[in-house]
Length: 349
Image 1 (cartoon, rainbow, N blue to C red):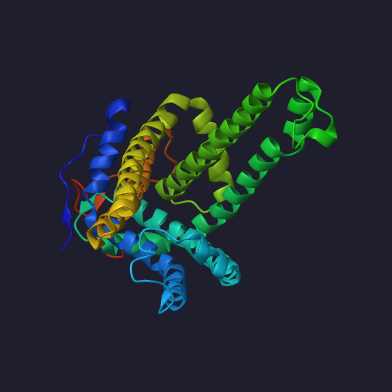
Image 2 (image 1 turned 120 degrees about the vertical axis):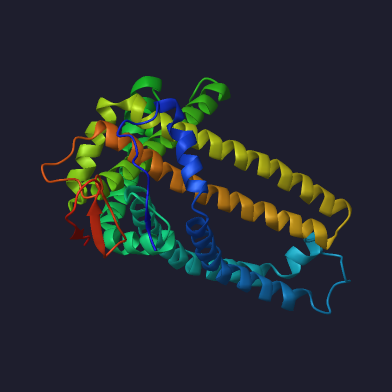
């Protein structure tokens, strides 16, 4: 049975605490992030099975036991270069399909997270997660298409005609035939700095588009509207009007995610070094556990971004004319909703 939450304050926590509050709430939803982790591992399973089958057939009765435990020798890579190339081609094709499924599952998860965070109830997290995923899926799918188009535009701006003409040709007098190599620049340091600036600009714009997508999904769910394009335009305007409030929590969450992933990466490299020196199954298990924890942490931070977007949006986004269905009522998805402090009830759709 879904129990009502205690009355919550209408004012948002100070913005410096938004990221911490979002992490706390997301970590407190273990059924949700365990489910998401299981599905993502399931999507990675076909490629893992294919590689395992190839390695089993390639190494059986052909190499001394344990000789390839830590790494693959040059002889192995040369002997099986044709089979490896064919396997990589097959995995690339299968991986494209799995990547599409992963993006569609991401649309579903976004709706699930937002349903859990917007509905002021506790308990029944998985039920609300599935309800929200199905409820917002097609709206978020349209937004996915808009996001991919936006990322394509960003790639064209940074790596296409605008960068080549404005930066390389006009500012640094690089001829068209040298856009790829930058061989006409005075020294290599300038070329390296240009490439670094280009990559940094792309990373910043890429992150900005992803953040815009989070706020657009939150606006669609918060107002329960259908137009992804209009919600996206409004989300851009909100980010431009409140850049500090909207971007600071996302940057803080990214910093937390990156720091943990870097620590896990350092730990994984240390374990790999131990495996090279002394191959043991226990070290393999630790390496696998580290990789799964990194994936789990990214799932939790992903949910935290939606909770942060909800907190910020409730402060800076104006409510629409009709009553907010999430503000003053409690109740399970698809069932009766009881207004806080009132006697009448309705049914959530």
